[in-house]
Image 1 (cartoon, rainbow, N blue to C red):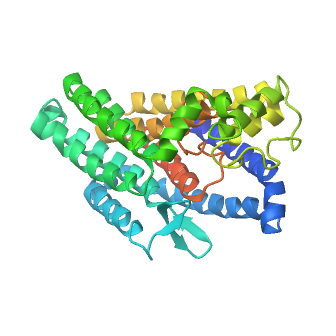
Image 2: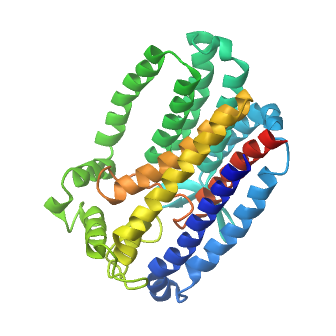
Length: 362
């Protein structure tokens, strides 16, 4: 699978390099005015990239099957971290959410670690319990219960977007493994009233839904972010206004270098730029699926499915939010958006994926 590994590496590096360029372009004016340094976010992003590459190579340096021995401890550690981050004085609070640990100049988001830990746990369980996967007690509950615990802790931060994406990845892995559709449908139907309650009873989430339905009805209020995002994408036309010449990044579009960086790509690089990003992610998912298909080891198969689903789903959601096809979720664009924890753990996921592919050649 050398050709597939090379493709994954090339695609990832192109996306990372595009991210470096667009983070500087989209954040330099804001950083200069607010933080007195136009390269503030760029420098921090480069630090996260160094950490990410180091951990990516580490994830490639051992036999990935050894992770099965640490599946439960990793899950337990993730639960402990998610509990600790909710404790005042330990977890860092920002914008009404308590999602981070502050370690000097670096922030660590334990929910990103929890996603990777859960994927490893589910892959290990599915590989060992394939004969029981259609059983409710032996094959369904042992996955749903820890997933529910993680989701409950993450939604308490609060972070509904990550909660939904984590649950979706786990359900995809279970579907691929052959879990009964009736079991999956049951958990989805049980989750819908909970999600409805979490949206309706929380004003800012309800406002996001209203903005999604018609952002232009209140373009200067709840629909401001989505309307500005659409203006950015529309302004770019086919070829874009030119790299560095975005107008929307000049304090119009919030989160221009994080959640809505795709919109700045559309404005500066046009339809050509956005289609290039979409094609790169499609190729990444396709090559990741090829790794899963060619892997004869059950644990490697389910691990690959989980990792590719995690990155692919996050890309779909971010792009969907930027173009107004999905409600605002607050999920970064993999490899491109500024954001330390997400970038580092996505690069670790790529390292694991390459590890699985390399093992097939040995």
